[in-house]
Image 1 (tube, helix red, strand yellow):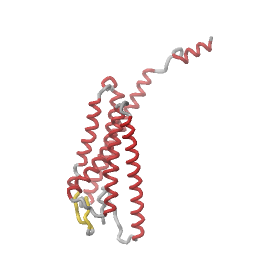
Image 2 (tube, helix red, strand yellow):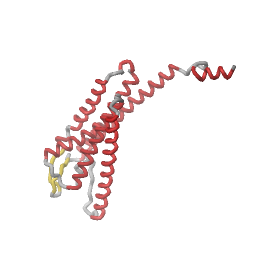
Image 3 (tube, helix red, strand yellow):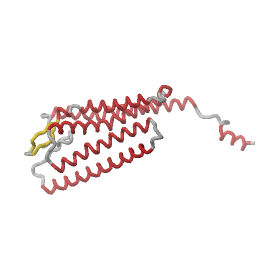
Image 4 (tube, one colour):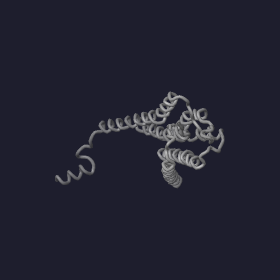
Length: 240
């Protein structure tokens, strides 16, 4: 049984698989990775160029979009591209220190692309629920983004310990091996909770509160009086 070093998900390879099947699978994986890489790089580069050209339209939303584009672009350049290179070289050629550092950075930018979205949701929640204390708080926006990158680094720090250079089937690989299945279950539960469950819960809670706040404020204002505004004047004119 072999475990892929580029993903926490275990891939089991049967020894009786045909070479033709392996070749087709490798070709499909390369095609998907290259398509994913091109889409990520072109899309996020276009966003960053657009924001750079519109310097006069500075806003908090553009600030968060820029941070999100940087995080997503880093995923493409540092995670997807590295995976493509390793699939080409097959063996790990960068050494043990680079193995730990690169895996840490790959996981870091993946977490960051998620937690910047969390920071954006908290910022929108703050803007809707506390509008009087919100205007002009650029320092708070920068703190939210710094916290997103900081928490991502903390959650990614175990990669320094878990990954190491090992000889697998007579080839050097940047490998993660937790030993027994129970440790794998604990690790996968931790990744699922920190990367998906917790961010999804925070984002959902923020937008539920935002919707409820907008709904309640709209109900308090109530419908506009019949005789006011342009429509009211028009109806009076038609009545006469």
